[in-house]
Image 1 (cartoon, rainbow over the protein chains, first blue to last red):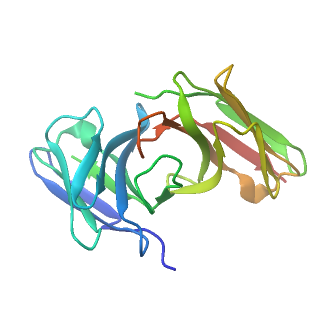
Image 2: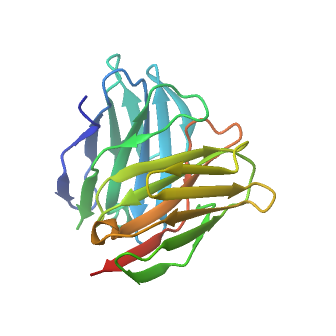
Length: 114
Length: 112
């Protein structure tokens, strides 16, 4: 079974631009979560989607948004990019959103904002 | 914000030795998970221990959980150079759904 895939793997943008990252979960997984990893703040939860609905949201500004499609694929969007948005963005999928579910991570998208 | 603190921040050992990493957290949890990350790549799930479990084994990995002390440890026995990576604990807080809160991580280096 294929793992979680994320595209693109690397991205360079300039301040003020917007970016869309894509995540395809493991086949059959219906819950998708997004995390941001930076050297200063570590790994931080962005949001979780299940059945095309956002179930949980982390403490990030409204510039960060996401959505999930009927096939469980998910996208996240960051508008008006700032230098501090440079990070590794990780997507994780799990079968269901319930507690105790193992989350499987993709390879990440490394975003550099210049 | 990160809930967990991991100790030590960095650990360097020789191949064949055991490596122990500790994780402390702050709130009630449903479960605690350990992940490995190689050189800023994706996270690989290692093991999940539920709040009603005290110890769990998987191959060369042994995880303990003490909910009264809000702490967990990961032991890697007979380490190999391929175990060189960063290790993170992640807590699944009570009522938090799939909202994992990660620790600060331990950088493990296993030398030949």
